[in-house]
View 1 (spheres, rainbow, N blue to C red):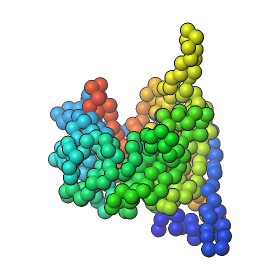
View 2: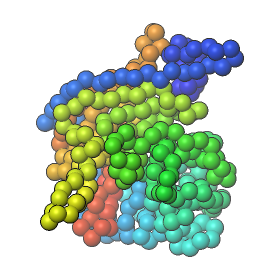
View 3: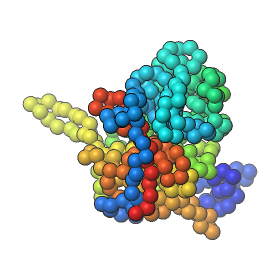
View 4: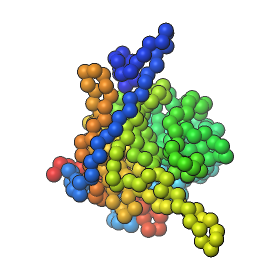
Length: 358
């Protein structure tokens, strides 16, 4: 049963107003725990393809994102070659599908990929903010435009909709960061979430949206790109939980904007800052939130969702560490994950790794 249905049947701030139920979001402050210098896990690289360290001879034009289909094949969307590569569980190339163009099953700038619960493959084409859908045999099903210029941070598929985390790239555009559209035709359903709350709306739009995931129970997990904040939404777009992590390792979002005077002229620039890289809920209930620091260190926080007898939705910090743990792009199977690497020439690659307890 979906999270929001369970919550409606219990007392998580549900207030009856005649025939209308209003769900009040829960706000939570997570403890200030300094990341440990050692991870509780060991990282084993299983295989690596593409990028600078590949020994298999497989090369990508670029790697936009990866997904895993219902047959456990790995799908790699390639924005530069404008195709989707299909790999087996050992990282061998099986085939490719899609091609450059504007016709059925064609792309201009494919950047994100998702697999629906029924096995259909959906590709987000950033060039025209359109969705190109294929069936489980990689045959074209439909193509439609989403109607807005979106620079997708994340792209996910549910049984009835697709969701994009993005800031709308238009003057005076929406401040929402989660945009949901109907699966069959791209009709807008709702917008939710908000840009960073900072002094400059321009700065907020430049920071854009954070990573987005669909949880194991159908809830939506979103991580803000600036202040350390995790939000949980139900399937109706209602925010159930806002969890803020107090910390001593991330600067305020306002520090991204540096104002100075040089030779009597006012200058402004965006200062490189840590970036919220990923949020993912694994099939065994771990929630990993990762922040990429300027020196290449990755701060990984591991959480657990808990539900007490009083029906309180909670997020508990289990572990926190700072090292070179890869960024979790996709879970392959319990304990095994895929990560994207960057090559010196921009080609990029894909790595499968395993986490095991020390």
